[in-house]
Image (cartoon, rainbow, N blue to C red; front, side, top):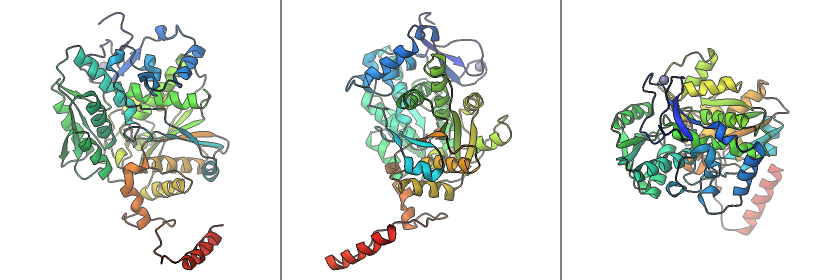
Length: 445
Ligand SMILES: *Cc1c(COP(=O)(O)O)cnc(C)c1O
Ligand SMILES: [Zn+2]
């Protein structure tokens, strides 16, 4: 390995050995554990914390170069080895952090912020990791690698991101989906971007097992979050949140969790900021799971010692329907370091939280519903306090989950809402309309 290398892979379980990031490798050759991208922190420490903050801020006024992206504005911390010409960016990141004081009051926290990760090219935070992975592959192909396609298994959002970034870079993509288990909008995205889409008659975990076999052939590069390049991009989410809060970390970050890549990334971003002196304390983490797919929650109940893989049952939060999370070990480390807790929400609880948030002006995806429901339960249990500042990661745009919103039509079996809102058929007669509006507004105020 080149001694001047500024980042490299190491084993998450601590085996010796460093591997170059331009190698096709996803696991430690000694123990089979996942890999972690490690940075030359000494080199990064050549800049003071204030200098980093200034540099990141100065790039916020950059409108078109790769550094205008939320991820590449932090490029030195992400993938310092990339040639700028190989950066494949679709303007990812730089998503709004919304203050929602009325919702905060309703939930019972001092401050509530919603990190709108869905306001990005393919509508979910998966863009943050995919820009890094596809850029690295473009670099490897430019350097003579024989990679012919990038492959992934997906609960929907990963495939949308991979297909878009692949198409943008001109690299073929292959997507394995569990038949009938993702939303129409999510299936439409990779098809539109020209990916090879295979629907398999299994669940996500089954697709995962097949994609691992496909990527045994090094010409098919694996894009699942087992691949730690994605974590490097996703960790900028933590940096961006804290930057938006003027480098004053919140007390809590609430995040919906499936394969546990994103919570690991969040922890990594926070750790790096502390190591480089940009923050001096950590927020706590509330990892939120759906009751139907709760291996992390169950593990938490017994002290995070082991994880029992499960057959994940159907949930409206289809993007986190995962029974055997690949980044479990990474996530446990983060939960321990950040004094984290794990919560779970039932289908009805996620519906109630989502409907309520929408009535405060949001348009939540079901996964964000899970996070909001767990936040509500944690405030009731006095784990999160009345004075705390909390950030909820809204992982995807509600527009990707239009079927979910048919709950207002009572069209989803097993859940209901007392606050359903339906269109009112009415004659095109101004007197009838006026009467009706008067009555309705009186009722509302
Ligand atoms: C992927 C995804 C998650 C879960 O992230 P993990 O890294 O798998 O834990 C949550 N919400 C949405 C919308 C997603 O696409
Ligand atoms: Zn190892």
